[in-house]
Length: 269
Length: 180
Image 1 (cartoon, rainbow over the protein chains, first blue to last red):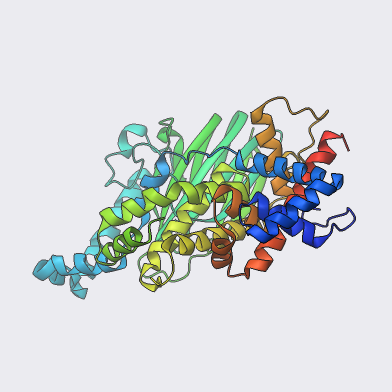
Image 2 (image 1 turned 120 degrees about the vertical axis):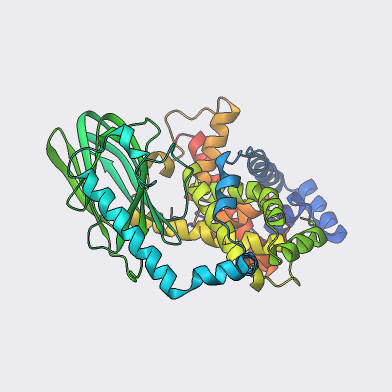
């Protein structure tokens, strides 16, 4: 019944149904209203049907209005870029903007950013990223607080094993890919996100529980460790010059066992 | 749903005015969210759909034809986006049993919350075409004509879908009450 709804009762006189529904919806003309009144006066079955349909209609009309989540308006506004405004902003940059737009300078900035990032990642080594250090690393690690959901949902993984439950969602907006990891385990658990060679760069991770100390990077993979509930937002950015971003590879461990291994699509289906 | 005010706000958006954009979002996010929620039956998915709707609206605002009502255009995008999400979800995960069936034991509608839950569950059993017209009629408060414009369907088809949908809802709720 879910996909193909069929009415299994004997087909009701189409005309009666039309009159009843138009009347219920207040979209009936005077002549039809008269005709319906005559039918109601003479037929018990029409009266019953009228009553039943009115109950259904009332139930539908009485469904309460739901308050949208409070973050929604803000989240939408942050993501919207008005087409003309970007042009206006370009114009406002004026001479300095044009100067910044020069190819040679952009290349220089890209190189400098690359050096900073390389040093940052090198400094991170392969051990855990200490919470105290994360905020000072050129803004690349651990931003404060988890922001509202952003971007178009590209893929979702649902975990429902005895040892580990929860979900991971991947969203995209412009060049930013955000992984929202919400998991729950009874013992220690770890998520390994392999993004090396996929056209993405690490752009930050945050956790409302302030658990940035459980984040580490090993050989191009981010490791998010936890014991109990974990909620992380990991930002990855399309690398400069990278055209196609290939799917991410995720592994989920709980109590030192590999629970699940998935690929997450980085393009809209 | 004030055509002139909406048209003025759209024009301001086209000039890059973010305040106008904010006003349009503020005005329509609630009805869009509610329509999406009743089609998708889930708050998170409805919030996702609402965000995507507004991103699409403002991405294509220059293409909006001001001969038509702005809300009709927004609702059309909202309905399409919600139905896209329904399709995506169907391919991704099996329907949760609690969502699939309104029958949860001996059927006695004890309180309004429970009734709403059952009506929503019955709504989720309708096919997408039927559910969409019911949502536009009873949640969004659109007339037959407006629904026809939003869905780009003749009024006759709107009416017939709405009648059939109500008949099915009636049947589902009655079956539930009789414990079938």
